[in-house]
Amino acid sequence: MQRIAILGAAGRMGRMLVANTLRDSELKLTGAVEVAGSPFLGQDAGVVAGLAPCGVLITDSLAAAVRNADAIIDFTAPTVAVANAKVAAAAGCAAVIGTTGLKDADRAALAELAKSAKIVFAPNMSVGVNVLFHLCDKVTRLLGAEYDIEVVEMHHNQKKDAPSGTAERLGEILAKAANLDYKTDTRHGREGLVGTRTKKEIGMHAVRGGDVVGDHTVIFATQGERVELTHKASSRETFAKGALRASKFLAAAAPGKLYDMQDVLGLR
Image (cartoon, rainbow, N blue to C red):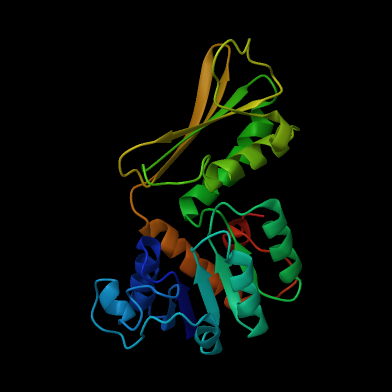
């Protein structure tokens, strides 16, 4: 049975991860971590997640949590993702990182760490979204350069980053398949007299409102027709289930590369 420590255990995503871990017969919750000063410190993680007491108290010591865990699951903040992974790796603990907003330097640091540690990093752990990633690569190559590509994403009004990490990953996949450069060929929204659309660009549009968990649509448009691929998440549970699937994957995986959900799902 794989032992799991959840970081950010009292947050919305953390509670979902705790609940799903406790319900999974192949996993055992052994750690629950929150930031120093959290009002949830010392409380039972199961109770905080809305379930019966599980005997795991929320702590602010990551070092203590990883000593009794086989894997951590981290959906906390981009500023601490690399540091958390290093603490886990030093203890021989695998890491599943679903935090969005990581910079290129952070990703490079995780890739370096993954040479000797077991890590899955994905901006979206949803199985459905990762199938969307796979399809977008295939569809872009099949349709060719005659199709204009636009990405539209919508999230709740409390989301702080834009575009979403998922939309960015979609953009990277689409750009690579279309022989474009995501950094230089992405157009983030349009305003004013911008001129006609060029063939060497991918449109990226972020919408915020209400309590939307996450909607992503990729539009392929040409003269006479349009193809749209859409994924809509109605519950954060889909991300939790994907993260647990990633942790199980790492139980049998070897260090040496930075894995993502495409590896977890066997889509490579």
